[in-house]
Amino acid sequence: MQPDRPRASYASDPARSRGRLFPETDSPTRTQFQRDRDRIIHSTAFRRLAHKTQVLAPFGGDHFRTRLTHTIEVSQIARALARGLGLDGDLAETLALAHDLGHTPFGHVGEDALDAAMAPYGGFDHNAQALRIVTSLERRYARHDGLNLTWETLEGLVKHNGPLLSADGAPTARYAARGVPKPIIEFDRLWPLNLTTFASAEAQATALADDIAYNAHDIDDGLRGGFFTLDDLRAAAPFVDGLLLEIEQTYGALDASRVVHELVRRVITRFVEDALSESSGRLARSGARDASDVRGANGPLVSFSDEIAAADRSIKSFLFPALYRHVDVVVMREKATRIVGELFPLFLAEPTAMPLEWGGQYKGAPDQTARARVVADYIAGMTDRYALECYRRLIDARMHV
Image (cartoon, rainbow, N blue to C red):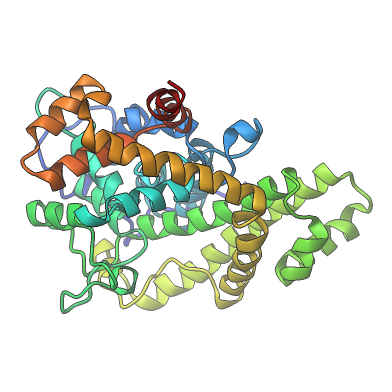
């Protein structure tokens, strides 16, 4: 067993956190980041992830990943990366547990449908929605809305994929066409998150963990669901072919389920080991002395090597047509688009169709844009099955009266 690395100088230190928007007395039993993690785990939004689609609708099979199981797998990998790099594992775990809180029902297609519905009102972005959830929509505490998380957690949640603004204040490539989402800009004015810099090494590790988990479990789910075969995958991705050859040479003939498991665990292991090697070198060469040096670097310091980055691209290039655009998945996408696309205008026109608390927020909104955001918040929080139930009750039932 390899021991944990000592805390690196460039790791985030909970004892030196920039604190919380609303000051609180420190916990006598938990660090600042452990406290953030616990608040996320006990949040309503986190529980709902159990019934939200990852890629394949969970009602199509009991073993397909949901948003929650994906999140747990990202958390495990993020902690492994943090442990190997001498980072704060609690912050990495916190960011992994929070990174998908803003997702809608029905996976990315639900987000696309809600974004289209919200186009006249500023659009919808799941990353911005996650920020809204932890800073406003979770209403649990007597003294404030939101979970009152530390600055480091909020920064990592917003910037785990890199800076949002360039040095001159222009949106970076990801947001060049539409601009940085308004909820992020508004919160940044309240409590600046330094949108022009990179996030902590822990946040960067979480972004890699998300990619690793995606590749591994989408291969597993795609094979389990019969969307493609091992031969299809190995022909498209030389990296995978090499792993399958290794399995065959080591074990000979195995039943298919064992081959798939051996493949998936090797994908995770190779990606993690590569990330640790590449990132250790980058961090050493950067001369980073503390977490602020990581943020101020010219590029990400936690990353894959060029070789594994190419393997990552080859897997994703295969999965896009083979799984994400498979005819059965497209049928689900069309259904999800219809459900979200029809629920939005219904609630916007008939706010009494929403629960009383949401109708009250709608009534108190100052203008149509704010009212539309209330409706988007309500729909985004739905689980797959609750969205289906609402559609059947409010739309299907009316059509058959």
